[in-house]
Length: 285
Ligand SMILES: O=P([O-])([O-])O[C@@H]1[C@@H](O)[C@H](O)[C@@H](O)[C@H](O)[C@@H]1O
Ligand SMILES: [Mg+2]
Ligand SMILES: [Mg+2]
Image (tube, rainbow, N blue to C red; front, side, top):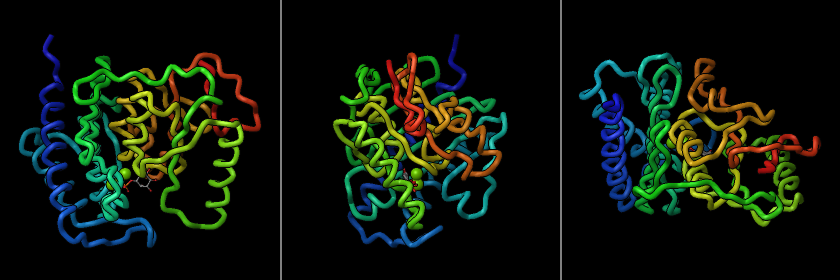
């Protein structure tokens, strides 16, 4: 049976690749840096230009489809997910990395129908790695199949996280407390690429066992949530509930901030997490 959305997925891959070229070229020029919610929440004209290029190219081909785009929402567009075919776009995931030419910058394009991710595309454009997933058909990097880590012991794991853009000392204290809790499990190490999408693709690739972050937005993780789950991983919120609803934008109805956290772990077996670490949700595969 013909795949109804394959044509759209092919378009997304081509659009992400074109967008990646724009990002790479922009790295050769001065980057005009602006700020959004705080002095460390950065955006550039390239973020805005790339988002418009992606959305315009989709509108020409799929005029009835809807959009949730990071920079469109920042400019006042609503962040509401309906059952309609919806493109969930983060034109540059890792804007701070882009500004500093730190080599992990992704173009993230997720596609949802009936509030369910149908495909996800994350192009790590400085590594030239195209991560893709079609619901029910697996996850790939440059065409090679992906599988999450088989590590069964969190004490032999690497955990990824990010610090976001909130510099409120109380929030920072909570982040450091979480870091301490995780490090003292103990784990082999902690890492962060500077972009949620690439961190989650590292989980899907089996390079890190889990990734957590408090305060992500739906566009940060819509595409990579499907890449993780199609690679055998799971998404959960800090209470251990299935976070795909949030990742699919299901919580987007309550606005972009609704996605509190997406912890991505290998497909869980039984998990008897010590209650004092419930928020880190260890996985016993
Ligand atoms: O803004 P952006 O570069 O698209 O997305 C980034 C996320 O990928 C990252 O996980 C988060 O910690 C940053 O604060 C920022 O939100
Ligand atoms: Mg982002
Ligand atoms: Mg972004």
